[in-house]
Length: 328
Image: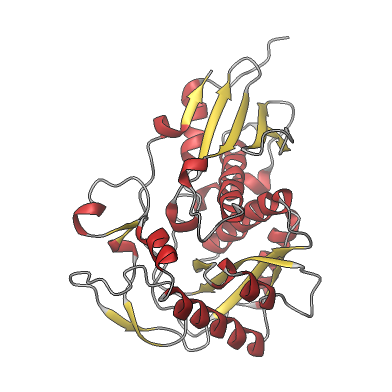
């Protein structure tokens, strides 16, 4: 019996979809290898695209690569392929994050395939959102999406939201006195001529307006630098936040959380929600511990999501697939 194998054009399209995933400061810390003989895609972390001061244990790298892994699964299902995923298959190689075998061994996952249309539409929005609440049925669906990937999504109570916002403000204040952290962020900012033709990082068009009021946890990438024609805006006073986390805090959990994050973001996009992410306070160990929800079994928070109805963010640049994919 002849075994169907995806051709190089198919694999290129799958990886292209995968690279739309979010990553810390749009570092895109992933590399892919496709082995034609075994029709297997290897996902590897790119150690040269880390943020050492903000992500010393490379947790955020795993989250970004996990999100890319899930987007690959979605694109494969849309194209009619099944995926057999082996996470962290080689304990001796910490950069080898997953092996994905593509096949036609049965019907592809229809629930995954339905998320495909959200892939090109999902962008981080650093704009103000409306005050109207997210319907309970939508919130429940997002929680189920996280659970399907072995993670949890919690919508914190008002007092907890207030505490989380205080943590972000605390982190912002500390960063002003930490030149290494400032340098870590500045490395991935793209302002003016730097933004033209860039294939990674955060371009100034994606900074959003400078906050003149409100408490939404939106990181100001410009800091004290001037960005020509950048407007100001009043953001939400009580933003709608969600915490994504897992029971444990190991590389396998980080990779699992990254897949859950992408599943939640794509589903939120299909529901017409704008989304943004903040890990600002989670980049400090003491503040990350305080982010835990005492009323849930979530042991470790990996990401704070901001959800709402508002202007979607612009697309941010991506590296050409030829730079991240090797076919063997």
